[in-house]
Structure formats: C-alpha cells, structure tokens
Length: 252
Image (cartoon, rainbow, N blue to C red; front, side, top):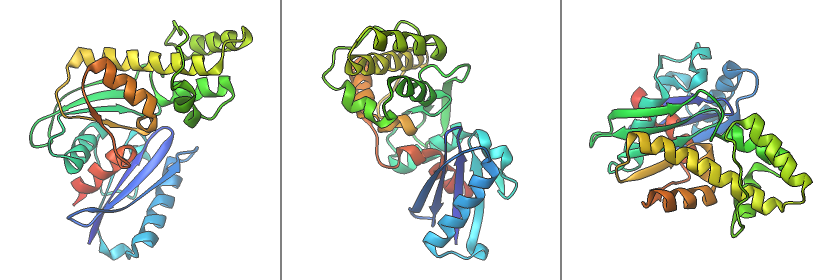
C-alpha cells in the first residue's frame, strides 16, 4: 500500500508517493489552466512509475491553492501543515522552513515533533516570489534558471521597487540605459533576498533552516540569504516537492 500527496501550486503541480517508510517516487508538471486535469495526469503517471494498481492506494491527500479542484482526493490539507510534515521527514532537526513559491512566500516555525507552531505568509502580492522573478527574467529576455549564474560575481543594480509592475519598468529602463544584464540580475536577487529577510525578521528564525519551493533551486539567492541571515540554510533535490511529500506522509 502507498499513500499519495498532490501539491497544486500556482506555477507547478507536484506529486509524491510514500510506502510507509520512504518517498518512493515524485513527479512535477506545470499547473497550466486546469488544476484538476494536471492532478489527474500526475496521479496516472506516478501509478505507472511505481507500478501500483488503484486498489493499492491507501489514501490521496491534496494540498496547495489548487487542492479545492481535486475531487478525487480523500483529504485536503493546508500547505503550511504539509510543509511541516515534509521538512520533518527530510530532517527531524529542521525548525524553520523558508518557502518561496510561485505566488507567495512563507516562513514556518516547527517544534521538535515537526508540528507547526507559528507561520507568516506574504500572499498579498507577487513581491519576492517565483512569479516576480519570472516576470523580471522575461523583461531581461533570459530564462529564469539563468538568473543565478548571471548574478554570480556581478555588482547589483539598485531595484528600488518590490512591486512587480514597477520593478519591471525599472528593469526595462536599466536595459535601455545599457546596464549589463548581470548587474540587473544581481539586483533582482538582492531585492528578493531583502524581502524574504523582512518576512523572516518578523517571525524570527531558529536553526536548522530549510529552503523549499521552486525558487530554492536558485543557488545565488540561497547564498545571499545565508549571508543576510548569518546562518546555514539546507536545500535538497526534494525542496520543490516538500508540500507533496508532507501530504503523502499525512495520508499514510
């Protein structure tokens, strides 16, 4: 028997399968216009990947903003709770999770049993999120994955606005003025770092710290956060799947 967790975010949908001892498979697809459709596709793919018939599914748990669109799940759980369970699975010593996703960012504090004791979320605008970086990458005419290598070693330009609309105008103006893309990319990552630092400062931070969400793949941003916070930050290949992992574990 396995349990399955499906985390439907604004940009990407993730899935994880858990056999009671370990995560045995994960999958990821762009969310697109149909959260229900992508959830069904991920479920089909992971059952094929794990060679699991439907009658061997113990439970399916949905999380993320799109969980309300998954009629086939047995339970729907908030992403805050799922991130806590996922972090505890990866390392029981994790006490703080910094999650930067497509449309929001959050800081979650955990106790020694992996239970959420406090959290703070920025979900009022796209400032400091993956969506912010995607829009800026488009303005620079580069792939979002290129922002980290571009920014490495560059002197950061000053990006004064964290509003996505105004910041995009700043980027366009800097490009028109001939500012190197490397400097602009560095400035953008510094602005996201400062926004995240502001969020962390309001709730406090306790070691050990885990960095999750799609933006956690940005190594330069991780480096900037470590410098700003004065603390080591852990991220793994499972970082983007943290919510789905936690949902699968809850389901078991």
